[in-house]
Image (cartoon, rainbow, N blue to C red; front, side):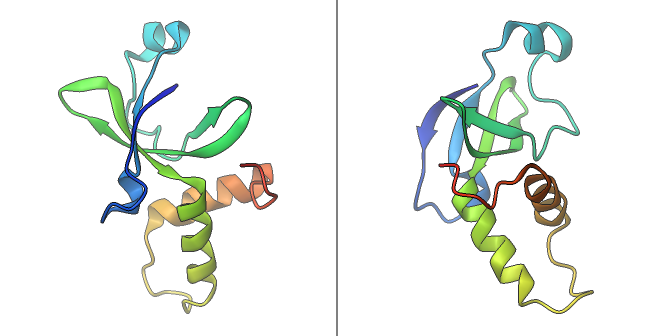
Length: 108
C-alpha cells in the first residue's frame, strides 16, 4: 500500500489520505479495493498508520484512508456516547478490529 497524498486537516477525517494498492497478489485476486475492505489496516514500515475507508469508483486500485489517530479520537468520543445513539457502524466495527490487534498501544 502506498500513501499518495495526505490531508491531515481536511473536513472529513475518514478521507485523510489517498492510498494506492501496489501489492501484486492483492491486485491479481481482487483488482484493488473491493466491498468489505473498509477497515482493513494500512501499514507503513511495519507500523499501523490507519485503515481503508473508501474506494475510488473510477479506479479501484486507489481510495481513501483514515489515520489511526482520528480513529482513536473517535473511539474515545464514542466511549462518552450512550449506547444506542447510532454512532457510525464503520467506526464501531473498525475499532473492534483495532482493539483486537492491540492498536491502543502506541504503534505510530
